[in-house]
Image: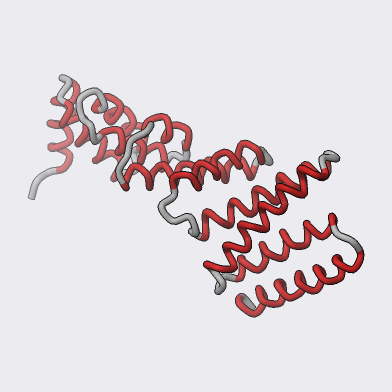
Length: 212
């Protein structure tokens, strides 16, 4: 049985002499060991001569929760694996920005996700787009930009309607529908508000039925 410690020592000797294959191998090994700083060190060096090193380095930065680093490294690389990594990074970036109330910046990340996502009806994608447009709409309404707010909130409703069409068995779908429908009610007249209130109640009831 081979000694992994000895193999790492040999690879390190070669890597320190500039051997790109050894650098790539070391980077991958350290990634598996979750020694991420060492993985970054060797994969960064391997990038100079090994085409695969960029994707591996992007995976390390993803594990380190550094989405912008991932996007910088991966650039415009094509291929299904590169797109998958880019989508994960954009989602992570958007979520981080959203949790810090940087809604307009988060929207940019989510819209980039939408642009490159192979499945435009993906639940994680649509739910994030619905939430971010709803949040931006409420921000605009609070800032007195009522007409712009209404348009953004209508966009949120469009995404939640897509969720209803494509993910009718998810409780979250109806919670988001209740929120987006209810927020648009502030732009309606009294009778319409009553009707909308009934719809919101129905969505909430459906959500409870699906997730009691």
